[in-house]
Each structure stands twice: as structure tokens, then as C-alpha cells.
Image 1 (cartoon, one colour):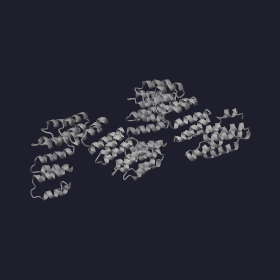
Image 2 (image 1 turned 30 degrees about the vertical axis):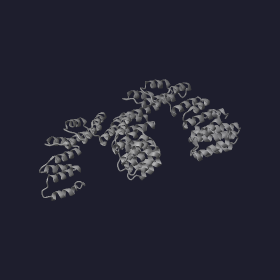
Image 3 (image 1 turned 45 degrees about the vertical axis):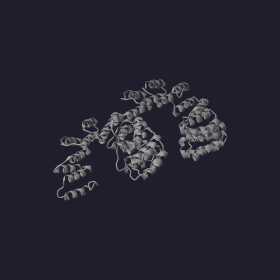
Image 4 (image 1 turned 135 degrees about the horizontal axis):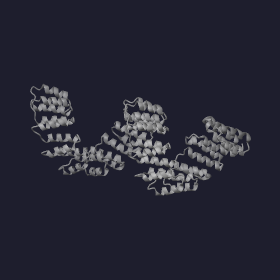
Length: 637
């Protein structure tokens, strides 16, 4: 009784109170130690036994099998004078659990008989080694199949194949679903974002453990379904650290930092995964001190957390500190090296980035891509092309970086040649080539028409091609054809119509943008204020400037006030215009006022206010170091 309850000490005390323990008593004690993982004591009891039988031998080989000591299992098995199906099954399962399907099959073929445990053990051995075809074939030969037999096949598909179709076929052939197979199929569906099918399986489960709940949670997370993920999370009868970490990671990756923070503060315990996610989250919202605090309070850290805190410093401009953290890392993997390389590249330190690249003990495709992109973006196309040719495996990302760089610098023929050399193209490849043709709408039109697929970036690139040529009508027509629009789309059509003098059309587009729920930014308002300027709408112009901060939480820049200054100046309100400039110079700094003073200078000359024109000219010269002298001469000063 004590042995069955796991109370080995009590069982031992009872055993030694027996005057002359018989073989049955010895076997009970041996089995107690064997089943509870006390291998050394089990071996000691086995050696002290005055006599042994088949039960004794099966108990000790099971203990060695449980400990993974296959050589001891085989040694004892070969010396056993008597063996039964339990003995054979122990050896069979031992080989299978070691991942040796070949030896497991040899044992299986030698067995004098098989029971359901034997069949399931052989199927499990094949499944563990990824031999799914052999496992399915064996499943068809079983005289009587159990749920475990089917479950092994389903789990094999999940772990080794990833083939959802075959896994579902086997799963739905099962006479009944167990927790293991249901959880396995839900896990596979999460990788394929099969939300409806996963929900069907999950709802059909009679018993759901925390692993099953976590698998369903992961389905919603991988499908980007925030509401569904939160519903599953809050419905869980029991949560573990995996549940909490999954939700924290989901919120951080989707920019829901406040939600991630609330959840992090509610977690019963923090581990390296949740802390690392929060370091990334704090960095993304610019709270470096909080990220450092999380890192310093971590119970343990690893190379991922060290990389995260170093990346946090790098992203916020603290390159020296990022380098210092990198130097202090106990271990560095290729991700850490690539992070530091990218940090230097983004800071324009191409020489330092190249030095790091040369020092890397190992490189992956991300490392090569980062270095190719850095060289290309710096304009060193020859070095970038040379590195691209040296890459052991060209990825579409590296090709796209080069095409984008050639296009940006105007080398369109080279971009097209590189595009034609690519073994395969993705949408980014096409968009990179299209963006390079933004200065030539005719060629851009031909390329756009030949694209096998398009997304919003493709349409925006074509829109930009018309806008760059100043073709407001073509831009508006293209805009109306777009299947979807985004902020860039609206800004392009608003800006080009404003510059072309179609002020009313600009304001109409702005109203439609608001009705569509697209939030305007600083570029939008530059176009809107330009339109107001052309139409002479002084009151509306000023209302839009005030609305920027009151309704959109945007800080008006000097370029926005320039429109107000220009329209005030042309309406003869030069004094008010000058007061606005001086007020903004005090708030934003004198270096930002040259454009506004030029606008006031032109207006003062037009209104024949010589004194104000001279003051404006002096301010312009003071602010831009004489760069505007040709303009000042052109207005007659």
C-alpha cells in the first residue's frame, strides 16, 4: 500500500519489520524504488534479493529503461532465463524512446507475440523518428487499434511533417479523440492559422488540460486575432507561465505596450522570456530606463535578453553603450552579432559595420543581408554587388536590397538586369523595381501592368510616379482606381493637387480622408494649408493649424506656420505675420525660421513695406548663412 502511494520510506520500514520477507515482498519493494525513479536503490535491492523471478527482472530492466540506460537494459535482457511479452515490450520501448527505430524494428520482428502495447510502441518509435509512412502502414496492420495508436500518428505529423491535410485525415478517422491528439492537431492548425478548424477540434475535446488551452490560445495569436486570444486567455480555468508569456509577447509584437505592461505586472512569476519581451516593448516606446530596470532585476539572463537590452540602447541612439553591452556578453550568437552590425549601419558607420562583419565567427542569411543593405544604402554599389556575389546562398532579401539601391540612385538599367537575374521574384522585388521608375510614369505604367500581383505599396509607387511628374489629373484618376488606400496614398493626392493649385479638390480629398477614418499627419496638413493659401482662406488656414494640436495631437512645425505667414502677408496683415514668426522662433528655436522670413520678405516687398522687408532679409541672411542672397537680390533688395 505504502509503495503504491509513493511513500518509499514507509514501505522500506514496513519491509524490514517482516521477519522473513518472501519473494513477493522483495518484488514490491523493488518495484516501489523502480517506479519512483530511485535507480541506485532499486539496483541495490535487486542485488540483495535471495531469489528472483520474472517480475523482479522486468522491474529492474524497466527502471534502467526509464533512466535511458539502454546498454544495461540489453545486458540484463540477454541474461534473463525467462522472458515474457512485458520483457520484450520494455526493450522495444527503450530503443524507440532512444530514437533508434531500426533496432526497435529488429526487436519487434523477433518477438514471439505482440500485444497492443507492442504495436503502439513500434508505431511510436517510427513516429518519433519521423518515419510517418511506416507508422501509418503499421497502423493498418494492428488487429485492434487503440486511441493511443492513432494519437501517435497525429503527433508524428505535427512534430515532423507539418502536413495539415494528412494529419487531419488521420485525426478525423479516429474513433474517438484523446487530449494528446486533439492538442497536437490544434497546435498544427495554429501554425497554419486554421482558426475555424482548430475551434471545431477544441470544442469537441471532452477534457482540456492547460497544454490544450495554450494551443488554442496560440491559434488566435498566430492569426492576429486579439479579441479571440483575450477571450481564450480569460476563459482558461488554469494558466501557466506559457499562457502569460504568449499574451505578453503578442501585445508587444503588435504595439499594444500598455496591455503588455498590465499583463506583465499581473504575472505570478516572471521568467527570462517575459522579461525579454518587456525590454523590447519599453525600447519601442522610448523608455530605456525602464528597459534597463527590467534587465537588472531579471532572476536570470541569456544571450537573447542580453541582445535585447543591447538592441534597446542601439535603437535609441546609444551606440557606445550598445557596444559596451555586447563586449560584456558571456556568450554571443549570430543574432547578437547581426544586431550590432545593423546598429552601426543604421547610424551610418559603414566602416565599423564592415569590420564587425569580417570579425563574425559565423554568419547567417540575415548577417549577409544586413551588410549588403548597409553598403547599398550608403551608395557603395560596387562593394554591395561584390558582397552579393560572394554570398553562399542568395536570398530574395539581398537581391531586393540591391534593386532598391540601384533604383534609388537612378541606375535603372542595372536594377532591371539584377531583377532579371533573380531566380525568383516576390512582391517586394517588383515594388523595388517599380519605385525606381518613379521619375518615368510611362515605364512605370508598363511595369505596373506586368506585375503578377499588387499591394498597397505597388499602387502608392504608381501614384508617386504621376505625382513626381506633377500630373495632378493622372494622380487623382489613379487614386480613384485604387482597391485600398492608406496614409501615403492620401498624402500623395492631397499634396499634388495642392501644388497644382487645385485647392478645392485638396480640401475635398481631406474631408473624404477624415470620413474614411484615416488619421492625418504633418505631411497631410502641409498640403491642406497650401490649398488654403492658394484659395486665400485665411480663417480656415488658421483653424487647421489650431486643429493640428487640438484634434490630432500634432505639433505644427515652421513649414505649417509659413502658410499662415504667406496668406497673412498677401492679405496685408504683415504685422500679424511677423509676430507669428517671432513667437514660433522663441518656441522652436531660431534655426527653423528662415523659410518663414523668406515668405514675409516676399510679402513685404509686394506690399511695399520697405522697413519690414529689410528686417526680414537680415533675418534670412542670419539664419541660412547667405544661401538666400540670390532670392533677396531677385526681390530687389
